[in-house]
Structure formats: C-alpha cells, structure tokens
Image 1: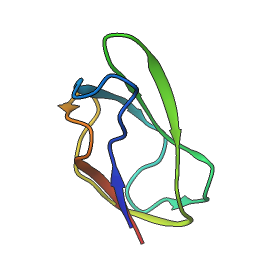
Image 2 (image 1 turned 45 degrees about the horizontal axis):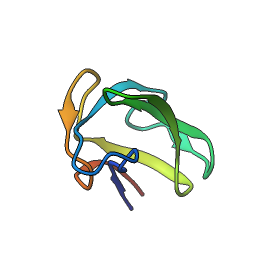
Image 3 (image 1 turned 135 degrees about the horizontal axis):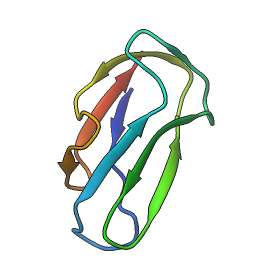
Length: 75
C-alpha cells in the first residue's frame, strides 16, 4: 500500500516530514502513529492506514513534499 502525503487543510500547501516513528523493516499496525508532518500552520501525527511492514521510505525527515505525493510503502 502506498502512503500518500495528506492535505492538512490548506490546498496546495507543501508539507514537511518531521519524524518517522518507524524504520524500514518495522512492523506497523493500522491506526498506529507512523510519522509526524507539518506545514506553516500546524503539526500533526499521522496514523498508518494499514497493517504490514514498512518497506520503503521515499521522503526523509526534514524533506518537504506536496500533498498527494507517495512518501512510503507498507506491504
């Protein structure tokens, strides 16, 4: 399953990945916090949408992306 950067309420506003709470190879449970992201207005922890193993992190901590971009993958 692809993990997509969500829109934090400000259409088109870039988001920054602050922290990954899991590393590649870690087991992840649906609903468990996966990463923290922020924009100019707020910071939010995002839960994993599915259970599985985190197999890829495509956007590293400190990097900025646009909403809708694939940032990680769980299998």
